[in-house]
Image (cartoon, rainbow, N blue to C red):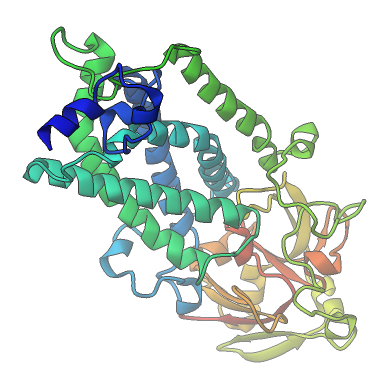
Length: 426
């Protein structure tokens, strides 16, 4: 058996015997590009990028105000994992547009870096024995959590931004818990490997020490390590150019190839900005939103039923606010006009300090047909029950006869086709 191991690792074996090598044999991996410095550069980029992804992901979750009301909370069993949650602010009005745009765009841009990093260390995944010591076992476990968690988070995230819900269960639940599993591996792996990566980047491999990531029997080089890094960077740059436009109007949006395609075209005119959910998709009919529609407002003053004409007769206010969705796309500021939520709260019996509001839509099924808004969101003068946008009545797909629009709130909390507003403790 010892003799067999020596034969399998000799570099002068004929090709027929080289084919007998397994991935557990270092000689199986022959790319001349792999090396400690190449991996260290990719690792440092991922350290910065994945940290940003995790922080903006936590902010995205907090923006839903999940501790406000059960209808907002898609992970009710999270326990102490929600330790950081805070009341989501209404300013600046582009806050969610920025944080979620960064989360999705950076995630897309990091795909080539992540794949290159996994490729650079893949020989380590097959190394035998699986654990040589307690420290080595800890490293291997962290690597399993890191690689599995990263692949899961990137895959579910990319599917979500394309509105392809091929995974079992709720995206919110899977992505939330997957992020914490990933974090456990990420932190452990960073603590174990960051000092080594910094040392390699500063001083290179110490003389006399082997580069354990380099192939012991490399093939002739066809591409330098710098060239390989340049290719990874070019791939990330291409993805940036073809994805960042999801958050901007004009030419950049037209070349945002990873924006979901094949949906309903909002058409020209004042309502010509992106939508995810159409009236037809949730079976909202003209009969539901026609002359018989009434808005029900509930509070200490009792129950009021207001027609669209009644709402138009109230004092109208305007606010320039974007729509920003969890899929990472957003619009520029649209000019909304309607009745302030605080004025409707006054009608409901809260003339001084409006509380939160529970919003219900005509939509009868699907996520976020009901949503809760905090008191600070109701009190903001830019928070409206919008009746018009950009000088025209709302289109059916944008929520006619009335919809919620709140600064800095995720798109799903800007409820469309509003039927009932219940003001009070949530």
